[in-house]
Amino acid sequence: MDVELSPELTEMRAALRKFVTRELEPLARRMDETNTVPPELVPLLRDNGYLGMRLDPELGGGGIGLVPYCLTIEEFARAHRYFTLALDYSSGLTPAALAKHGTPAQQAAYLPGLVNGTIQASFALTEPDAGSDSAAMRTRAEKIDGGWKINGRKHYISGGGDADFILLLAVTDPEKRARGGITAFLVDRGTPGFTVTREEETISSIIKLAELTFEDCIVPDTAVLGRVGGGFAVAMETLTSGRLGVSCACIGAADRLLEMSVDHARTRTTFGEKLSERQAIQWMLADSAIELRAARALVYDTLRQVEAGNDVGSAASMCKVYCSEMVGRVADRAVQIHGGMGLVRSYPVERFYRDIRHYRVGEGTSEIQRMLIARALFREAETRA
Ligand SMILES: Cc1cc2nc3c(=O)[nH]c(=O)nc-3n(C[C@H](O)[C@H](O)[C@H](O)COP(=O)(O)OP(=O)(O)OC[C@H]3O[C@@H](n4cnc5c(N)ncnc54)[C@H](O)[C@@H]3O)c2cc1C
Image 1 (tube, rainbow, N blue to C red):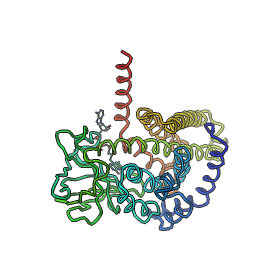
Image 2: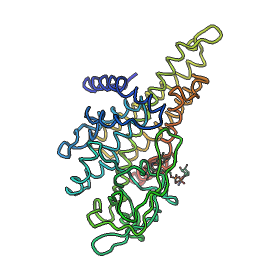
Image 3: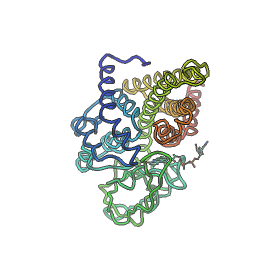
């Protein structure tokens, strides 16, 4: 049930599917049992060329295009959400920002470790009083001689407790905020004044969120990523590409959930007949298949627009809303089709059901995406008027 792919991409998908089934599925099963990331995961991904695959070869990356990268996210998401995060940690949010805005010294300091999986970064934008309205952040960086003094608190930061460094967004000009008053900093773990003050479990398996506190934390001028005042733009462009990655992860999870649902319907007998014979079940499966195909068409069209160099800000928001809500409906139907089996920990449907809920909240909620889409419509209308 594919949206049309070139012969090369079709071949790539088949190879990925084999790798995921043979190598990643057993690790996903262990992660379900132990709730920890197996130590062999990162070396396995590195040795097979999946870490840093999206970065340019001159930066030590694999130089792979956006469409094949997203296809990889999709296939990894069929096994476990965490595998897509491992890709993201080495090619996505922070590495992508470093590749685009980092100085040669910053790239040399951080990218090799991210690409070979020996260090990990987190992206710290959200604060207790600044989530959707991220420009309302209070974390402040004041200019001092030779550097910056940072004070403030970030929360809900994925992997922040284990990160070797943080891409931190802080206010450098309170008058300007989103219009040139927010700056991105690279802050190393162990910098005096930077503490991980809390870690929280989430509905998702494995993922922990951290609260990070900065108290008179002093970083040098060389810790600024990009230009002073350019941080909000760095965060927003990073989130736009992140939204496409999330959309592909939703497609991969939905694909797997539908596959499990079809398999279950074909084998489970009630009242003397297979579930697959029941119209109520067939319609749920058909609805999931329709929505999954529509999601793929939307996302792959948008990816091609990116590759053609077109602006996809609003389209990326559409992809994220549609895909994150689509996978919610597919997961809900999958639980229903599996009955009790869909709600017990020993079967993956339950884990998928929990893991995918985050997608409607993280990297910009559905409401915020709709707000951005509507704003783009009004901007278009103004140019027509
Ligand atoms: C698992 C997980 C991982 C995360 N990882 C990271 C990370 O690594 N780094 C990071 O910086 N952040 C991270 N976050 C934070 C995430 O980005 C925020 O939770 C999200 O942006 C929403 O912010 P909030 O929680 O403050 O909700 P709020 O902004 O308080 O929103 C609450 C509700 O109100 C709605 N709402 C808000 N404003 C409007 C409006 N104008 N119109 C209509 N509705 C509105 C929202 O859509 C939402 O439904 C993570 C969150 C989770 C759950």
